[in-house]
Image (tube, rainbow, N blue to C red; front, top):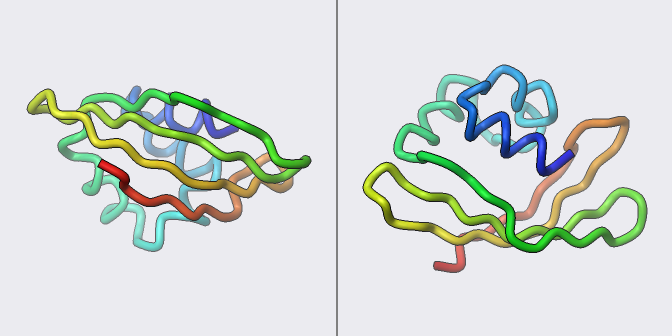
Length: 92
């Protein structure tokens, strides 16, 4: 679920990512959320670990359009086939 969510964002298929739970974890309107990815060229997942059936921990590498990479880590909650919660922070 988390892998597909970020693949959809990388593919600029924002509607699909929104449907996978972006609407639940964005904390913003759809247009604001999409605008937040304006300088993101791609997102790749480093480590993905599952904690039980609904908790997933992940490290993300967000390559920006200027070539820099931002690193994020956190936990996602999955329920009913969608992301229902997230606690993500930038670490570098």
